Image 1 (cartoon, rainbow, N blue to C red):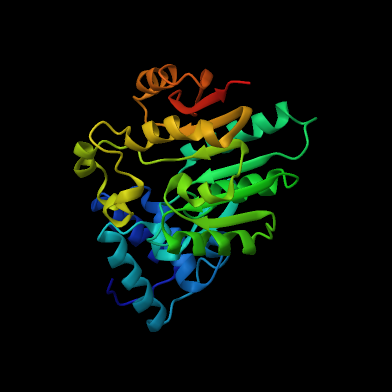
Image 2 (cartoon, rainbow, N blue to C red; image 1 turned 90 degrees about the vertical axis):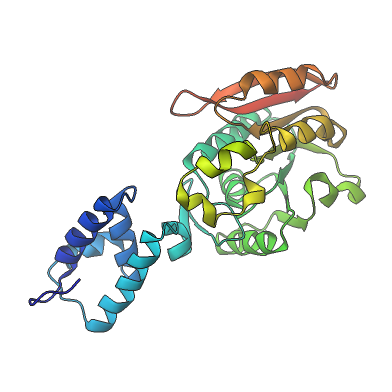
Length: 292
């Protein structure tokens, strides 16, 4: 990053994009834009409106630090502290997983349930393993008439989820810390919808994931030897917390449809399971209905 003529925003973007590309960084142009906009306190569109603006030495030094972090494979979302999900900005840190587009299928599934039960009184909705709160906040913004509860094992995650709810002015979400259903077990609560994005990666596959994954909390990804430890637990335990006819919505791995269907069929409290496909055509959400 040294040269005789001044670095402008455009020349710096071009150099960074090429440098990221040579080093195998995904979406190099997007990463360069997000990091530079964050460094300069601008919106991404402003980078092009001010493309010929020269950078000061302190700005170059700050941006160089961000480039080094990304080259160490630290995710862009952790560097800037924000990830967009369902068109809202979600604050993230290393206490929580970075929200993925695939998880928007869970939002779609829940909204479909809400739509089918539009004539019912407000529903009681529980999200387990809420992390950043991206899912439950998105739902509360889309349909604020329902009562939302969210829980996570990590106290740090719960604190972050509360902040995300507050910054998006979601006031009907109640947060608790606890291990899965233990967070609500002493409240004798019953819900109409329970949703979760549990860990579902097989332990043996963890080391083969992208290097960026090393920055994310392992407990939120590692689903045990077959990837089904948490899914199995939730399919077994959640019927006792669902009202008759209630729904359990689970994000699952790309190759877990048959295994999940088998687990549901072994539990007599469930009467049906359907699978919602993501934009790549993969069965991504198991929609499981409790008996009446």
